[in-house]
Amino acid sequence: METILVTGGAGFIGSNFIKHILQEHPDSYIVNLDLLTYAGNLENLKEIENNENYTFIKGDIRDRELVDNIFSEFRIKKVVHFAAESHVDRSIEDPEIFLSTNILGTQVLLDAAKKHWKINPDDKYCDEYIDNVKYLQVSTDEVYGALGKEGKFSEDLPLLPNSPYSASKASADLIVRAYHKTFGLPINITRCSNNYGPYQFPEKLIPLMIINCIKDKELPVYGDGMQIRDWLHVKDHCSAIETVLYKGRIGEIYNIGGNNEKANIEIVQLIISTLGKSNNLIKYVKDRPGHDRRYAIDNTKITTELGWKPSYTFEQGMKETIEWYLNNTEWINNIISNDYMKYYEKMYSGI
Ligand code: NAD
Ligand code: TYD
Image 1 (cartoon, rainbow, N blue to C red):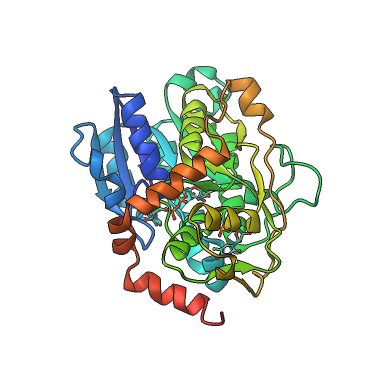
Image 2 (cartoon, rainbow, N blue to C red):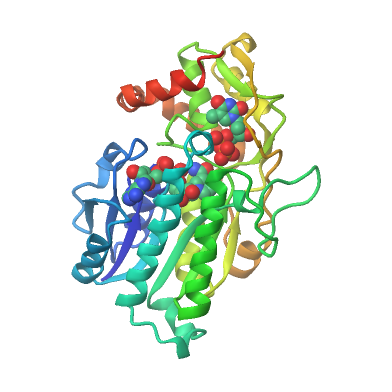
């Protein structure tokens, strides 16, 4: 049985990924290391918490001793690194934790992998690592910066991050690359576009708008609302990461996207009409500083080389997502903690 260390598995994408792997690879054992910050929630994992192939460890990826012990005790063969501070607005308010968790935390994991996997630099391009050990860094298309009206992000573009969040993710990507080039660590980096789906913390656009709309609260649209994101259902993201984990060529970067470019205002209007509410809920607010205008992923590499393709249409994915939030009011009410409400009220006190 092969043991996979999943970091940040109590968050939005990590929790969906753990459930996906336990279902698709019943011969795998998963160790979930998560600090349970405001974004981590064990309720996301309720249906598998007693699975005999799963262990949860509450802890910090920056804790070297803990990470070292996990590698020894569980004989970790693969790492899928999701744990991060993930929200751009929070990184603008207070960048420090982003640099600490996203950059230094990544280095701790890389050091443990390098030590425990006894990587030999002479073997650095050896393909037999594919079925053996692998470190997979879950990154973001935001490391490429912003696009104008034309073009898409391909893997060979320079990294030009604009927010403290994306700068911290780009820094981590470069360190992962350096551990591959210098020490021969078998790695992949995946860079995906904006995710949506069940269990997303309601500070991100889609869950925030759905929940506010259900509760007849104002819908804060930044600037003119014409910024474009390329949306990917979280379950498609999970299947793409699985594909890269088992089939990705060592040392390669794979962009992941579902070809669903939408302006923010289109999404807000779709949510309003699906829920039968009024456009009067829309409130245009001050724009985000350094706001990236457009993201779009060129997914040619992962689709042609590894045969992955998304299964959700945006319409079906949004319909299911809105229904999920309508059917999970207890999850919503538990998550809207005092901590979250304080942050939320501070953010939108001007509207
Ligand atoms: P999330 O904020 O929902 O979850 C992050 C998880 O990491 C939480 O469970 C949190 O408790 C945990 N965590 C934070 N600091 C930690 C630490 N020091 N030690 C251990 N655990 C810690 O994030 P998400 O949306 O699920 O994103 C997961 C990953 O995917 C991140 O690396 C993010 O950069 C990347 N990503 C996300 C999106 C998106 O649209 N959500 C898009 C592209 C890339
Ligand atoms: P977000 O979900 O924070 O993801 P990211 O910034 O990583 O792309 O935001 C998605 C888009 O929605 C982005 O252009 C900012 C915008 N937005 C709003 O207009 N209002 C909001 O309340 C939020 C949270 C985001």
